[in-house]
Image (cartoon, rainbow, N blue to C red; front, side, top):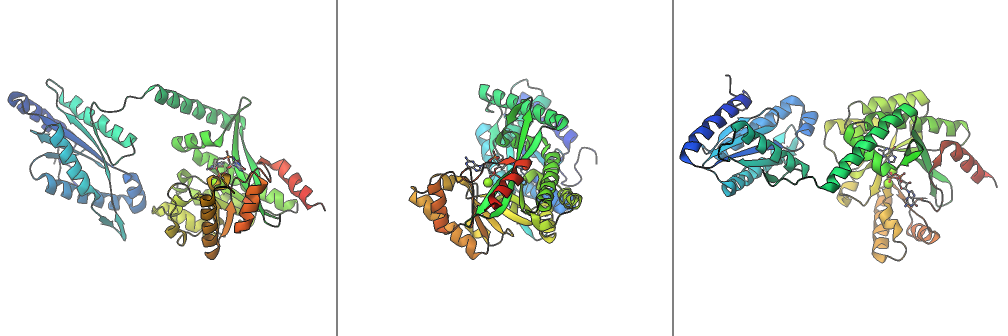
Amino acid sequence: MKGIDSLTGFLDRSGCLRTATQLVRDLAASGQPLAVLWFNLDRFKQVNESFGHIGGDSVIADIAIRFRARTSGRAELSRMGGDEFVCLVPECDRIQAQQLARELMNTVEEPLTVGDLVLHPTASVGIAIYETGEDPLELLERADRAMFASKGKGGNSIVISGDEPVPGRLGILLAREELSIENSLHTAFETGGFHLHYQPILRADGSIEAVEALMRCTVNNQTISPGKFIPVAEKTGLITRLGEWSLLQGALQARTLRDAGCPTKVAINISRAQLVSPKFSNALHAALLCANIQPDLIELELTESLFMDISETVQKNLKSAIKAGISLAIDDFGTGYSCLANLKDIPARKLKLDRTFVTVLPDDSRALAVVQAVTQLGRNLGMTVVAEGCETQKQNDALLNVGVDAIQGYLHAYPMPGEDLIAWIQERKQP
Ligand code: C2E
Ligand code: MG
Ligand code: MG
């Protein structure tokens, strides 16, 4: 039926606008307040990617049933398409609107089973209260904008229209810097401004455990650090192309090293944005094929949260890499949301302890205790433990004392271009 959404039985977008217009007309006469609550589910794209559209639809239908039960005639419910719901609530002021929004957020969060998984969805909510004489469309748009502001805060929150943070001067400057970096990335693609540098990782006996490929970007003789350009590449989707390029370059470097008589594992950093793409496996296999190397010459460095990602594509990509014989390493371990309990379930052969623990050695006894415990645990789980960011001999001694397997850091070598790497390795081989 026109005006009704077939999946939920709620009003659809046009039905919502018609009803809002009617309510505004009625309430204008009575002087009662009217609230619009705009809901958008968080990470719904991930649900669709993991479970397909049938799974996504079942989540929407379940949430709709919960909304209906909780509002019981108090509100006109609409589905604005996708994962967006709007509640038009007559005789509802700002405080009551917040209360209702919270109740509905709680009901969204109740566990929901899809396939063999239990999800705990959350929602971002925007609220707008009708202002005398306001156009109903503008009222809806204000609620939508407030919802966007809630997403901008990281989701799972309520923003009331009028309370949105105004982008300050710093925000504008940051946005400009991002645009300028994005521009530089495009130029770098056109002018061959990307390079990989390689940093050796050394075992206690001085032999090379692996080399880590680290991306460099130079535009108009200016270098941009990966800490700045990788996040922009991830945000803009350019990382897919960049990631494919680094996989191939890293694999070619592994062949060059092998052909030069010094076969060495090349570790390549992989972003979440790459691993959520169904194209990742193809790019990985294409790189191996093109470079014509054994898979054990490649290692992928991923942060811990990626191993715990439940999305089907990520799981498939990880399995496919392991099946092909490529080893995986947990990068930056100890930062973010590391959880020791997860370690046993992670199919990685290597654990890279983050630089923050190493920098404070040997004086910080608590950091030393953490390094010691994690090293022991990693080794008990059969993993190779690597410490990142070692800059001094004292740090090196402390790390070797607690038994880490290998060390990476400026003390031993700075990241260097591929051409210099072979010379560096061969020099070390000389007696
Ligand atoms: P990461 O993977 O943890 O790489 C190690 C970082 O530590 C590198 O920074 C390296 O130059 C730096 N480092 C190594 N030894 C020392 C040391 O002794 N002291 C200090 N202070 N730093 C040291 P870099 O090259 O700036 O890269 C930063 C991050 O950017 C990397 O951290 C990685 O997360 C990301 N990244 C770099 N290249 C790529 C890439 O090709 N793809 C992706 N997705 N991310 C990359
Ligand atoms: Mg790394
Ligand atoms: Mg790291």
